Length: 379
Ligand SMILES: Nc1ncnc2c1ncn2[C@@H]1O[C@H](COP(=O)(O)OP(=O)(O)OP(=O)(O)O)[C@@H](O)[C@H]1O
Ligand SMILES: [Mg+2]
Picture 1 (cartoon, protein in one colour):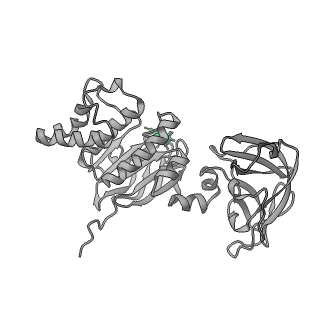
Picture 2 (cartoon, helix red, strand yellow):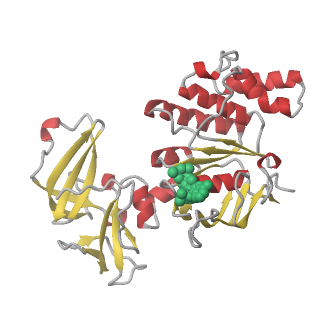
Picture 3 (cartoon, protein in one colour):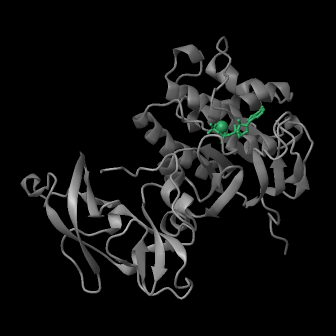
């Protein structure tokens, strides 16, 4: 029996892009190979300028790769224009027709394809219902909110039933609350229609909550590709560890189950690592929510430090704790009903912290200072 989808929805094979006029070695996209499965919600995540839009434009046919090929459902489409690919794109600027009603905006592509009027009417109505705008078919885009306009743009792309939908930071213009709401709605819609989504964002939380898998990009390359849990819990580089949320990164040297920080101070227990040679330059990575401040359990490593700063942010409080001059870790605590404000530290107290060695990652690269990280200098 033949599998209904023997091919990945999108295959990028050693795709590179150097823009005309750029320096000989300045690649916006530098040899990316990636398979995106049928029906997958796949995100491209990375800092500004890392090549996300360029990669999406090459997938959609809006830019030609300098090298490599793009395959859609097994067919090589490299060099084909956008309208010859079974792909639709939702750009950050929604580009709606302001003088047309919502229904006519959504119907636009179908009319150009010469589809029968009754069918157009039915598909447009279904699509407006799907994005919860079925009650406003006659409104014009300028009278809508940002989130509603976003949903029209989505309906207009989905109504063509593309095999793949490319979305370039579609929620970036929305305020945080609307954005969170649209994230949930977008994900629901994707599940209902079963179309492959390739979603560009530079928002880590957004990529983690929405994606089946994601690729973390840096300087034109994919640093790591996997499920949200893979890249968050098991980052393979210091870049990914610090770009995906907040991580404590301490540069040092691995020796017999400990990392000796470059900055000095006590050795930090990480447990024995068979894959790391003694004397290797490493960076230790541990998430702020994986460090205990009380209720220690057996087998934990314990260290003492001084509370240097306390940051209250509603449901959580972050403590910055100095283990030695130049070695400060952040610790995140949930503000549960049990925690009492008067117990909180204000700074200067000597405290004990604990962690489980298995929660420490030992990465084989020195920690780099990166944009988007949340490390604070509390000296
Ligand atoms: N038309 C162009 N001509 C020359 N260089 C370009 C062009 N478009 C993008 N670049 C460069 O290519 C690199 C990647 O740009 P790209 O737009 O793909 O990044 P991005 O990851 O989408 O960033 P952002 O998050 O800011 O949208 C950048 O260095 C950018 O300056
Ligand atoms: Mg971009």
